[in-house]
Amino acid sequence: MQLQFVGSGDAFGSGGRFNTCFHVVGAQTNFLIDCGASSLPALKRFGVMRDEIDLVLITHFHGDHFAGLPFLLLDAQFTRRTRPLVIAGPEGIETRLTQAMEVTFEHSSKTKQRFDLSVVALKPGERRSFGAVNVTPFPVLHGESGGPFLAYRVEAEGRVIAYSADTEWTETLIAAGRDADLFIAEAYYYDRIVRNHLSLKTLEAHLPEIRPKRLILTHMSDDMLGRLDTLDYTAASDGMVVEI
Ligand SMILES: [Zn+2]
Ligand SMILES: [Zn+2]
Image (cartoon, rainbow, N blue to C red):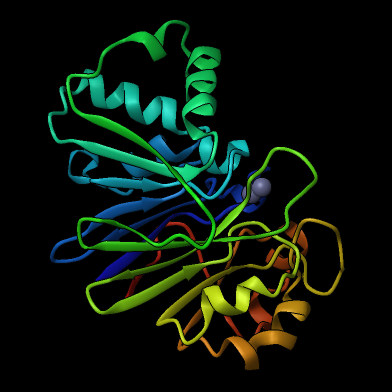
């Protein structure tokens, strides 16, 4: 299985990076994790065949993780997609998606797609299967409002990919990421402790409990991007491909 960082940036395009979007492809799997505002141009930049994507997992409704969906859906409509598509995310996703579509392209939420579109709300702790992709959402801490906020543990083709999403430190990241073949973790700051986001030093202190087989940092602010040369960890970059 292969994962490409289509977007590894934060909400503000730090370092000129695209908003969060990861593309996972295997023998029987083809899905996205998050679809931020800039994700359609990013998918096109990296030559990702959008027609072949079966599933989009959304961690939360912030624009840098979610606001690419109206563009992705309209592009699918205009390019005459026929393959069914599932979009799964936190509870409330049906309403939030309708709102996002109406804000960006009026009446677009009322246009009947040529393809089957299912929008599925996921509950924390409830494992769901989408074809060969098994998804367990975990609740994370990313603010008082605008939630729910989810991290994901995804099992597919005998491998485990975990993604922290945006969150300050929470114990649920241990269960989400434990022994994962690939743990993608937010590292917004190096050592500054702020609300709603994770710093590398905090994450580092908990790595012995999480024990990921491989760790890749993402969603980095300018503070972190300025230290990339001195880090002991792998940092994501846009377009980077990893074999899992
Ligand atoms: Zn974010
Ligand atoms: Zn966020």
